Image 1 (cartoon, rainbow, N blue to C red):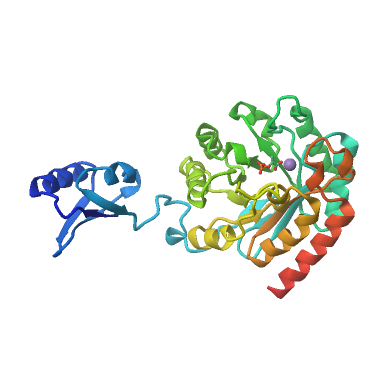
Image 2 (image 1 turned 60 degrees about the vertical axis):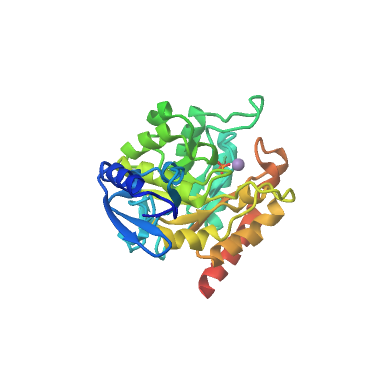
Length: 332
Ligand code: PEP
Ligand code: MN
C-alpha cells in the first residue's frame, strides 16, 4: 500500500503517522521526492482502513497495491479451483448447467421439470425452497417440504441439487443438499457467510444487486476464512438505471473475475434479464465470455408459475439454449 502525503506535511506529522502505522505491524518506507513524500507500507495491509488513512490531514491519497482478498486471490493460487459436486466438476475446463424452476411448487412440477432439464443437458437441478420475496404477501416457498421434494427429484433423476439458504438456523435442513446457494440479497449477510465457512459443502455465492466485484470477492473471503474453499461465484445482473431489463448483466464481471480469482464463475441470465426472450442471448454471451457454467430458470408452465414466470423458459426453449451453448463451447 502506498500513501502519498501532502506537500506541506510536517516532519512531526510524518513521524507520528509512521509510528501509528508501525503500531499496526507494518514496515514503513519513507521516500522524499522533490514534490511528494511517499510512504510505502509493507506487511499485511488487509486490516488497514484506507478511508481512515485517506481522511488524515497530511495524506493526499492512498493506493492499495495488493487486493484485500487473499484467499480468493488468483495471485496466491494461480490454478483454477475446481469444485466437485457428486462427481461433477465445476471450474477450469469443466462447464455445468444448473436449471430448474425459481421455486419448488409441487412434487409433480419439480420431478417433471427435473427430468426435462436433465434430458436437455442440465447436470444440476435448481429450485427454491426458501424464497426471498420483496413482498411478504407473495409465495414464500414450500420451505422444508420444498427441500424434501428436491431430494425426491434427485433420487429419481440422479441430479445433484442447489437451493437457497436464508437463515443459518436452517442449516440442519440442508444436510443432504449438494450446493447451498446464497442469494443476492444475502451476499453481505456476514453472520450467514461465517456459518457457511464452517461447513464443507459447495456454496453458490450470488452477487448482490448493488455490489461491486470486490465486495463479492470479500464475501467469498468470509467463507474461505472460516475454512470452506468450495465456492462457486455467480454473476446474476446488477441494478442500473436501465428499465428494459430487470437487472443489467455485467458480462465484464466474468473475465474480470477470471483475472482476480481462481474460483469458478457461473452466470444466471434469468435473474439478470427478467424476460425469457433475453435469456438465450445472455446465456450465449456468458458462455462466450468464459463462464464456467450457467444457472437458468425453467418452468413447465411459466404463465402459472408462483415466482418469476416471466423469465422462465419452457423445457423446449431450454433445450434450444442448451444446444446453442454447446455449440459455443465447441467454438471455444
Ligand atoms: C434465485 O436464484 O431464485 C434468486 C432469488 O436469485 P437472486 O438471489 O440472484 O435474486
Ligand atoms: Mn427466481
